[in-house]
Amino acid sequence: MTIQIPRGTQDILPDASPKWQWMVEKARQLCKLYRYDEIKTPMFESTDLFQRGVGETTDIVQKEMYTFKDRGDRSLTLRPEGTAPVVRSYVENKMHGWANQPVKLYYIGEMFRYERPQAGRTRQLTQFGVEAIGTEDPTLDAEVIALAMSYYKSFGLTKLKLVINSLGDIESRKAHREALIRHFEPSIHEFCTDCQNRLQKNPLRILDCKVDRDHPLMATAPSILEYLNEASAKYFTDVKQTLDQMGVTYEVDPTLVRGLDYYNHTTFEIMGADFGAITTLCGGGRYGGLVHELGGPETSGIGFALSFERLLLALNAEGVEPEIANPLHCYIVTIGEAAEGKAAELLFKLRQAGITADKDYMHRKTKGQFKQADRFGAKTVAVLGDEELEKAVINVKNMASGEQQAVAFSDLPSYIKSIVDQQEG
Image 1 (tube, rainbow, N blue to C red):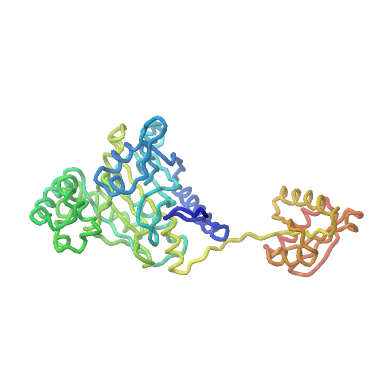
Image 2: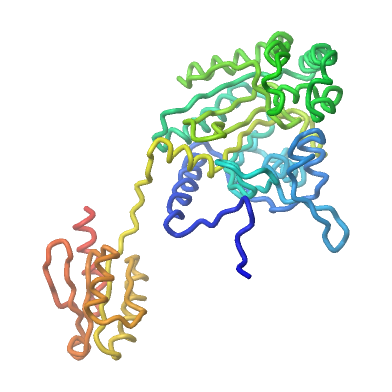
């Protein structure tokens, strides 16, 4: 019986790997500019972390987590998202006591969600996210949003739309919560079971329901913006003004809510080209009680997360291809058994000098080796046989100019480097 890859996962094959490396490298470069430092957390955590941090009423906790018992009968969960683990680490390592505040972090890693696979939605996904924890400052909200937009624009994507909203502070959310209950309660029996369960626990999440999104009551539901108190309204105004000053274009969407319980104040999403069922590329927002809920001080943070899988779909939709160079500087063609050992030695010395080099390992004839060098697009081809061994030289051909030169073994790295510098100069 042939064993196949689990549903909802994928192999990243060598021809696709450069794109993934491209996405990772751009993320690291951008975070360096914004002064965010990388953090790595375990792929699995205590189940309680996500139940408390993400929220009992969320789809992630109720339906999507990969949870298992270890040999010590402890309940563990493969991480479904990155914020709760980062905040857990922030609290556990007492980062709130660090001299440099706020603590600005980014992560790149795999997440796991048991969802129905479709375009842009897999059961193992790779996320890039940032978290800035330690202060409640509207200009920091704008910075995080600008970082996310800058990441997408760095690829040359143009079909982007940023939507933002405010969920307000605790007081504002309480008033809005009561208004939502009054709005939905008389007809809640017309909604799905999940929405019925959410009515008293977290009615805001009804607005995020995919099953009942076309119900007439959705369109007439009270807007959170109508219930923002003075402080929350000013905070949202300051965020928008900072984005305006940065030249970051956005739309305010009063219906935008995030599916996780820990958000307050600013929330945002970035949409991409329509490439299927999913058009949301990135989501994020500010969270207030999460740090305290996980045992830390009363402090606030803001962050976002995006998946490389959806970014790839957006790149394909707009026809964006990476400019990735992986040139082969030198290919050594060997003639005769005696040349094999010397070729391995010369390859090692070339690589030690920072020169990409390769040779035949399939015992091809000379003509076949030249064809392989051509398929690789080698910039130089060096031929080594019995005659060259006797003279301690190797014949090097510059494939661009056609020029050939016998080069001493000791001079080979510098000679190849001079040709490469000239070609790439």
